[in-house]
Image (tube, rainbow, N blue to C red; front, side):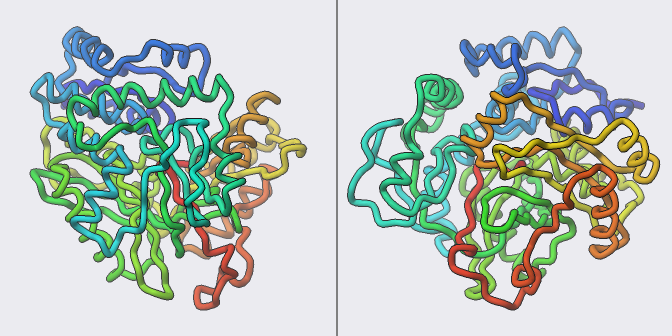
Length: 452
């Protein structure tokens, strides 16, 4: 028998797939808009969090929904928490959402409860587009206090680079301010001690390999689910693939979970899915937190399902209805290893060839269990991607394999069928975990969210 209906906020991409996969057991209805598709993203011009939540409450009653969920970083997680609070439904406390998403405040909390996993940080004392202070020691990692676009997150090596990075056109400033302002209005009321979110911040560069810890909290009990390895294209801050299960030592994973437990407890995160991005430096054995995201890392749900039989989207539904996820059943695993492969171009002048109808037919015949996403863009969109992200993500593929070696073989075969280069571009030093990399390669760039 199906569960009561759930209202899903900003439900698209990975979440739309998850909801479709579970629609028979967990019926749902949706509300929200796509920030990156016109004309729906025109709603950004007048978006207000509290007004959206009030309308969502009416929609929930009309649709017969009894719970709310969202994995959307920019607006959805906060709106879902506010709606759950308004309706008396299970949900993540609003203040905990704000504490995680306000990156400067999160650093301050981390400094109190897990200083060994923190790093030097400060607010950038400059308005958007304003003069850059002259007393900064470089290199520094600059990112938004409240994440808007990954374009605003990067390593800068000198004052010139920081100045160039913080020059925004009128349209860019408009977008940035309208993305942050809905959060700012709520934070001023509910977390005033954090200070404004209309700001950038500086962090010391991190060294090491990047990972993502996924888990959930049930009645205050922090329960880790697993760790995903996040592999970058060489000498860039662009994700190349996400691999599960992790190669990270189990003791290090346990230490990372302990850091997460201390932080989440400190901010009052008593219910809901979360993920913690972090670095581990093998040379020093140091764990350094990148950020906490008070939501599911939706892109990884399929990986856990393939390898462990755990559906993170079903975990989200259960939590929304006040059901202990530990009571859920598991599917039969279909793979010993799985990955989300990200196909990118770093050449602004190079054309990307998308697979033909015949190529895709052959691909699906050979890999019926795969997931494949294509992202064709026009010239204007490509210019924006290279300006903001320094690369163009043109495709994503999910596959499973018997083990990591078999997974690589399958990926290379599938990529060849699509006419794309397989995302295994590490050089021999990177493949050898014991060898030292050049200093510039070790400066890994923190991301603003656990997504491609």
